[in-house]
Image (cartoon, rainbow, N blue to C red; front, side, top):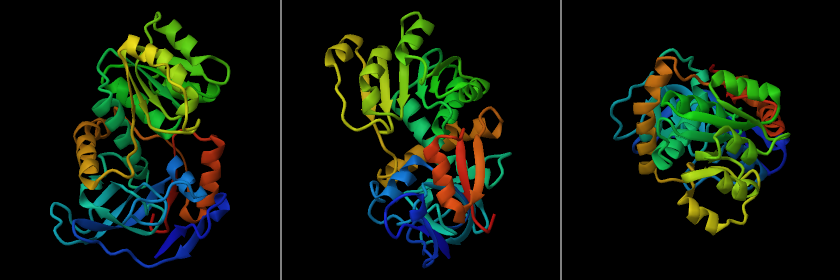
Length: 328
């Protein structure tokens, strides 16, 4: 098969479409012929040499894919050769084939094209696990999403609205904010021109956000805590703004607030399976009914992964960027 390899860490041109050995499904795994994979910020970090796959995972980038099962490994039940699926991965989505633990498989939702389904596993698992399983967003509460026009952001807006929450977003520029509004965002903040703490407090009569989903990290830590409501929950899922920041514990104590930080890739298989099962139970019906839809900016040939990374790093996209294999 062919896969995107990284002979040496570096810029987008470090990604090389090369012939590599076929994977073999192990105990509790299936082999998926990949139709499409999606591009995530973690893939950029891996390409740069900063985010290696966990032990035992595929060495190739790609944290999600869609395709068809071509082989069933030992101990697998409930799935058959030919099933169309999408999957959460620890690596290997930028390839023509990938071995997937059965607990990380999802059926393609009703009404979703097989290629487009590659845009779903990572964002739905990340948003559902952080916003709902950890931060427990409830109907009537306010969610602030940083990077509202990103893949994570576009999914978070829709899921929060689907459960009856109010949604505030930050994004860069009128075009991205307009797209967030189309998806249901209520409070639109241009982080390039406006102070998100000031704008959020103004829009909520001083109350702040009950839950904040943050991809920035250290740069926003102090301001995020100031933007939290009493009993608010800050969920940090990215470090685009650095890894070290100062936190005023007095403000946190006075607000009786909580700060959590999670990652998905390195979790044990059992934990991932619990998250994927929750996504299938709670999110898949919303997608199947059309209440929630994946947002795809563009789809490129997988051999063009370098260009896809350039798009992601330029932040010129809205939603997800996909890579399709020759099997698509």
